[in-house]
Image (cartoon, rainbow, N blue to C red; front, side, top):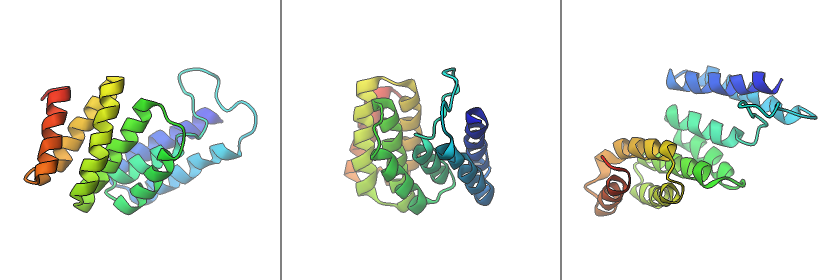
Length: 160
């Protein structure tokens, strides 16, 4: 049952990418059923889905769907959990993107700088890709000296 629920989060991500909010929401809600399972939820293989990432998954989907208020709530919940530096960096990057969607330069800089710090600690390729995506999202705000400085720091850290 765990792998089936994991597939629902993958489906939700795909639906978010297609801009299909209602269907994405239903897939995420269905994946939440993982919290009702008892016993071993995953088999220890590559597909380890036990529900601890649901807030992250939900937040990322809402970022993709450009629903910043919903994304903010889910991502803040995710930050309250115990996360690896790599996962924390991903959540922080998504929160910086939420700032760009809200046109809030303070939020872009606050979370973007924290995400960059996480990338420097982890040297994660996934975080490098997410930070490049953040750079695209914050491009309209680089006239702000703080956003421009963050952009320069990201470029220096991860390359162009």
